[in-house]
Amino acid sequence: MSRYRGPRVKLLRRLGMDLPGLTPKSQSRRAYPPGEHGAKGTRRKKTEFALHLLEKQKVRINYGLSERQLRKLVKDANRMKGDTGLNILRLLEQRLDNVVFRMGVGRSIPHARQVVTHGHVLINGRRVNIPSFRVKPGMEISLSEKLLNNEGVKETLARPALARPSYIKFENNKALISELPSRTDVPFEVQENLIVEYYAPRV
Image 1: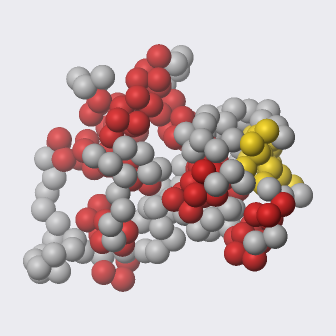
Image 2 (image 1 turned 90 degrees about the vertical axis):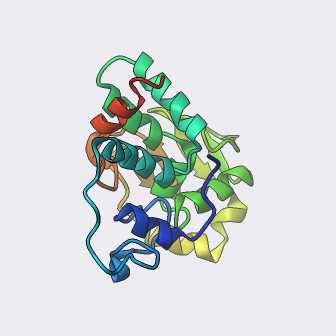
């Protein structure tokens, strides 16, 4: 499945939760599924497979990955040492488009991805325009002068959509990645063990 480009709040209502990486908007005003019968009753009890699928869809949609990209990321996490679930979350948080968003550039990850692909992001002084680039501890991220002069970017840097996580040290419009992301840096509720179980027979 390709990247989702439809109504974002409608998707939040289908998932039953807010995803800050997808949109700053909330589904709380109409916290029931979309559709003709969505407001008439409670959500149906989910099967075990549906619960696994829901957790997988949460991270895929929040971080803006295709199914193929997420499957490859899970394979990479399986090959790494340590807990596979934590590795998955770390690899998602280390994507350049997400790091730029968590710095405070853009209202969402899709917005930050556009900033990256347009060549406004530099890593250790070198321009990088690949959203999936994996940012590692010790790397410094800076922004082009043209972007820093944009009024909208100035506003989001002053008041980011989310609090900056502990692994990003932000100063003078530059971000230093000080450590690997931790479980608590993920800005929404997710049960990563269910994602591992979902992909266990599939990768």
